[in-house]
Amino acid sequence: MANDAGEDDEIVLSELDDEALNLQMQDDLYDGLKEEIEEGVRILLERGWAPYDILTRVLVAGMQVVGDDFRDGILFVPEVLLAANAMKGGMAILRPLLAETGAPKMGKMVIGTVKGDIHDIGKNLVGMMMEGAGFEVIDLGINTEAESYIEALKREEADILGMSALLTTTMPYMKVVIDTMKEKGIREDYIVLVGGAPLNEEFGRAIGADAYCRDAAVAVETAKAFVSRKHNRMSAG
Ligand code: B1M
Image 1 (cartoon, rainbow, N blue to C red):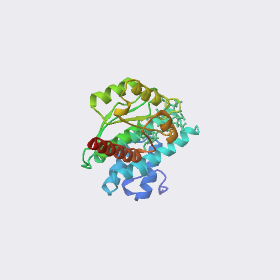
Image 2 (image 1 turned 60 degrees about the vertical axis):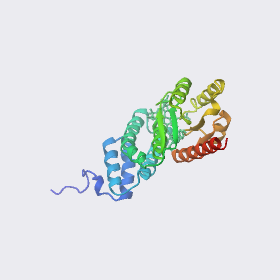
Image 3 (image 1 turned 90 degrees about the horizontal axis):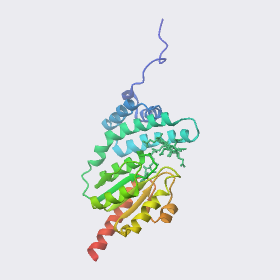
Image 4 (image 1 turned 180 degrees about the vertical axis):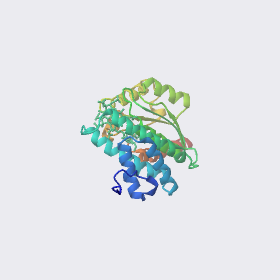
């Protein structure tokens, strides 16, 4: 008897056109299928997609759907962790490619997710994009205390502090870090950039950051603008 076509046929990613592959990868991300995501990323690279487009149009777009369903109680922590793990698999392939742009060295950034917060995908993305734009990035990871940020800023003679927070309960800790820098008299020695989904410009201003960055691309542009301003000031004075 003839097999019902398509019933249990496996989807072959390489046979899909770009649009179908993008949608399939977003489904695979949702299902936490790391190997499929890695394969899809490689296929898109072979087809000439820019690493940045794969990141934003496929992986970040897919993660948005995961986030919406997490918020709505359709997905739970274990599924979201799997999706995050699949996303990281894709990001690991893209990371060296984003860093390989040969951009001139722009400056040094210390970045970390604040104390109490373990979300690191956005922070990692910012780090990757900053590296791609020619910044050296010192990544302190998640759950970062004020003292660790400050110690790293001094040790690394960094230009920029980047802080990430994804929870409304952890974003106030950014102010703790900035206030500690003020107490130590070092606030003005560094450019402080903050980001994360629950933040906004007003919050950034209120806590005394130099700028709030909506996404990784904005973080890069903002960092470049502040660093060149700092260099101009130094050469004028
Ligand atoms: Co969490 N989580 N989570 N989570 N999680 C959110 C943030 C949430 C909005 C989900 C929801 O309800 N819709 C919600 C927060 C609600 C709130 O506070 N308003 C939430 C919650 C409640 C929780 C827990 C409390 C759940 C629980 O345990 N009951 C728990 C908290 C644990 C903790 O931190 N203490 C928790 C846990 C987790 C997982 C571990 C399962 C997992 C994290 C895995 C990981 O990161 N390794 C997870 C995930 C994945 C999410 C969502 C679904 C996705 C976040 C993400 O990676 N987005 C998220 C929902 C959402 O945001 N829509 C959610 C993709 C990433 C590319 O975007 O991080 O926004 P984003 O980064 C962007 C910009 O914000 C910006 O640039 C990035 C790239 O464009 N940016 C910066 C970020 N950091 C920057 C720093 C900068 C500049 C720009 O510095 C200069």
